Every structure is written in C-alpha cells, then in structure tokens.
Length: 369
Image (tube, rainbow, N blue to C red):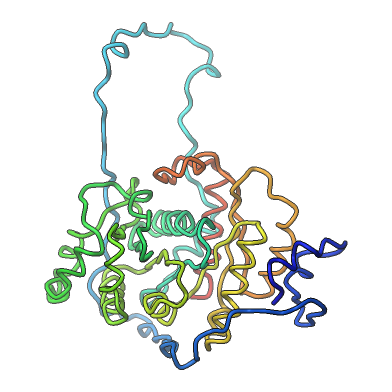
C-alpha cells in the first residue's frame, strides 16, 4: 500500500482514490510500505456462527431487556419566563411553532430492522483512527435499531482510553461504568433468571429509551482488567440480555481487548469520513485483518461513510466505489447540524432526512445476519 506521503505527490486525472491506494489489485508504481502485522497465531481463532433455534422453538436465554422509559427532566421556569407577555391569539398557522416531524422510517427499512435474527448478534464499529464518527455511528445505529425493534439493543463503550459514548448517548441516572460491572461480575453472572434486573443496575439508558448503554470508564488503568477472558464474560452477559450488542471499539489494533472483540463479532462496521487520512486508516485496517485470518469478516463488513460537513467533497464518490468493492456494502449518512457541537446525541433532534438515512444504514448493517 502506498504511504500517505506518496498520495500528496499523485494528483493526476482519473479516479484519484484508486490510484492513491493502488487498488484494483494491480498496483503500479510508487514505493510500498505497510506495517507488519503480528503473527497470525497471535489472534484468537474466528468464532464459528451458532445456529439459531429451530422454527417454532423459542431461543433459550434470559428474556431480552425491554425498552426503557425516557428520563424526563424539567427546569423550573424563570421569573422572566413567567412574566413574559402571552402572544396574541389567532396568529396565522405559519407563525406558530411547529413540533418536529415524527420519525418515520421507510416500510422496507423497518421490515428489515425488525427481522428475527434468531440468536443475539454482536456488531463492532471499528477504525484505528480517532475522529471518524465511531461513537456517533454506534449511538445512532443503536438508536435506529432500538426504535424499530422496540428495545433489546445495547451500546457498549469499549474504548479503553476514556471513551465518550456514555456521555453522549445516555441519561446520567447514575455514574456506574464498565469498571463497576467488572468489579461485580461474579454476582451478576450468578443472578440466573434475574440477570436482566441485576445488569440494569450498571446500565444507563438513551434519552428516548430506545436502547441501553454500558458506559466506559475514565480511568485508563481499567484496560489492564479488560483482558480477553473478562471481555468474553461481559459479552456473554450482554448477549444473554439483549438481541443486538453494538460495540464502540478503541484505536489500538494490537490490544488483546480489540482482538478479542473482533474474533467474537457477527459483523464489523468500518466507520470513516470522506478524508484521505481516515480512509487510508480504514483500508490499512482491512488489510491488517485479512492478513490476520479475518478475510471473511472483511468481506462481510459494512462501511459507513459519515459526512462531517454539509458539502461531501470530491472524494465521496471514489470512496463509495472503493469500499463497496472491499466490503459487503457501503452506506452514506448526511451531515446534520445537531451533531456538530459534539454534545449529547438525541435521535429525535436529527433532521427527518438524516433519521431516514440512519434507519437505512442500520438496516444495511443487520442485513444478512
């Protein structure tokens, strides 16, 4: 693969992205350099998919956690608000404040999202580069899935170095994180049929109640406790209580945590933005996974291109074409001004066209699972 420095020297006509990456499997010209991956045996063996229950037979697990009621917060009105003159009656309809349109996914996308998945499914959102909307994609995908399926979805912030998913996705009804769950893992595992209630003590919930949240911790030392065995135990609990587990991963592809998650997922979602550095990082990671024995996961992955600005930029078309060839599908979601501040993400605050795009992207993610 060409180095990023070589990209800046190649601005010839034609499909710039394909020339920059040397794709088409007929690479020509330029020095090639790519980091050496760890030995293949360093990875855990890919997990074999489990067969779903026979037709007519219920899946043998603890009942799925249901939709959580939204946490209502109300600020008392100020004196100025109380004493503010009332508007005159009989204002024209166009001057009255309109409530936001209801979330209405297309019937086809809704049907795809509500399909019976059989057993629980694990979906990881990955890219070793920061700032490529991994957390945003995890939150909004979980929101779209949870809204369509009426719950049963959880988003886990497994970023080892102070992830922000817990702050951006959920209501802060408590300060418990993955650290507290790990500290009480034995008791939670022993809860039996009461597992959902015991696990709920460690979960936050999205603002609209459409999905649950397992928040990350601010202490970077926690990564030492999230060894492969602990990660698998947490995953076992989450898949026993939820039908879909969405994982916001960290940036270190050498981490045992990251490798354990990758070896345990049903689908990878490659998140990126239409920038050369972000796309290069995603493409290098796919090469890294293929060389590590995960070619099938790469082939069946979904690429999610997220727009950070209103203008897509000239690379978008080339990136769509490139990643549609490398992965199973490529979905594009538009820019939305409500996401720009980097604050709490509320699915209902998105523009109607943005919500529709996320419903379609989420349906693309679950297709074929």
